[in-house]
Each structure stands twice: as structure tokens, then as C-alpha cells.
Length: 231
Picture 1 (cartoon, rainbow, N blue to C red):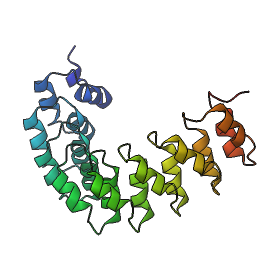
Picture 2 (cartoon, one colour):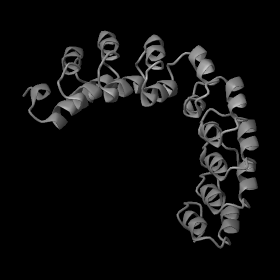
Picture 3 (cartoon, one colour):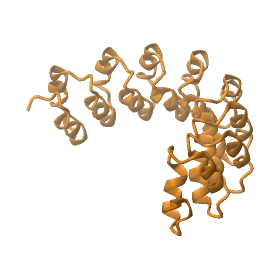
């Protein structure tokens, strides 16, 4: 059966985003009348480069956002999408690991805090720029640095002392945060930060026992669900 021509939009969408779908079929579905199907084609890792280039002109914001988020979208195309009038498309492009360091540096200085946040979220952002963004005056931007899995331990330790509770929460949730930094956060004033610490896979039984003395249910729930907790 030719599923790419099925009457169901959901079926055609599934074909369009399937990495095993032949290139000519993806290309054909990229011209579908339904934006959901075109969006799926735009997100396909194996979409032909010519197809991706054509989709940058698509009238649908959904399609262009999917294109901006595709790890196969090349840097020059991402540079074009980053100039879009759609903030969603711009921010998605800035999070794409293929975007150039020049673009990250440019948007890391943007006056738009959402754009700086997207740059801080990118796992390929240069360390020097990450360090600068870790000192940003907007907490949202610092949150991006705190949750970035490429943020060095020294910066995570710095952000563990951030005045914003949400930033410290992101530090506690970051799998790259070292144990000594997590230990400092065990006594954090915010219960959600302590709960995030209690959910870390690095927590040892002795540390979980300390957290089990907490008075806040949200912390105790994290302790109770941790595989290292002695019940």
C-alpha cells in the first residue's frame, strides 16, 4: 500500500517524518497541502537538502519552525531562519547545534532576552560566551546556562549561588553538576531546589537520609522515589 497518499493526515504525517522514507517521497510530501504533513517532512533527518532549502520559503510558521529545529538543516539555512519575523522560528534556529558560532555570538548580544536564552540553551555555544551569559541580568538567560549540559562545573558552581530559585533548580537538575555543588544545595532555602537535589542520580544514601529529614512534602516525595534511598 502507498501510505504516503493515504487519506489520513496522521498517516501521511507519520510517513513524512519517518527517517526510513525514501527521499523522493519526503520531497513529494514537502509539497502537501496540509501544513502538518509539510512540517513533518521539514523535520525529517533524511530530507534531501534541496527539499530543506525549498521549505525555508514555506508560508507556514509551523513548517519553518520544524525546519529550524532539524539537526540536518545546514548553517547557512539556519542563518536565514534566524532572521525570520517569527520569534518561534528564530529561537528554534538558535538552539540548533548546526548554527554557526558567529550567529551564536551575534544573538548572544541581542537585546531580546528570549534570543539570549535560546543561545544559552545551545549545546555548542562557546565557553567564553556561556560565561558571559551566566552573568546576564535576566534570570531566564542564566537559567539557559544552568540547564545547558555543556556548561562547565565552575559555572554551575557559580550559578548554584544565584539569587533566583529557578536558576538554582536548573543547576540541581543538570546531570553535569558535580556532587560537591549538589551538597551545597541540600540546605537551600527553596524546597523545589532541595527536591531537585534529592532527585539527582548522584545522591548517595547518606545524603538522602539528610534530605529525608526535610519538612516539605515535595522534597520527601523526591527522596522516597530515589533508587538509592534506604526504605
